[in-house]
Image 1 (cartoon, rainbow, N blue to C red):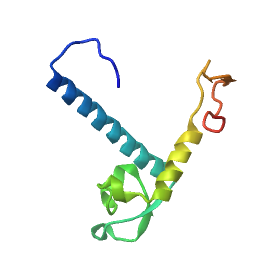
Image 2: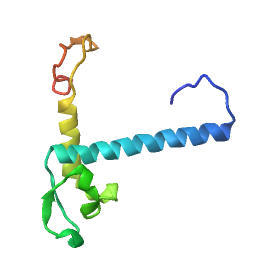
Image 3: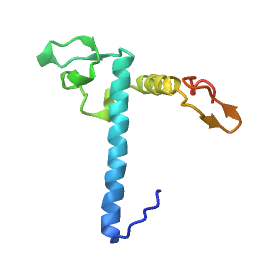
Image 4: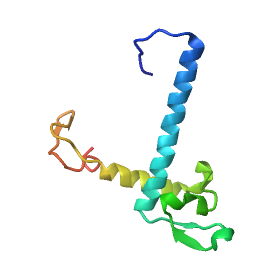
Length: 113
């Protein structure tokens, strides 16, 4: 948990922490959806939009079956592939290091850790 410098009643703090948690989950779901687009993952299209399978496109997410249900939209293998892709896409900034590993700017971080 984070420490906050301001003082507020407990119920306000709880609401703030719940909002922060909800935002993190929302960002994670959006990241998975955008990762699916980057990997050109094929997903089933709703029948009213023609059916069949199509490469996922984030802007057209409402066309896809179960796209509003994050728990069932991706298979375990799809989620793993997207997270792996995100990790291998991490790039170092100038001066980044982890323990004794010093990275060059733009170097892939996910492959070295």
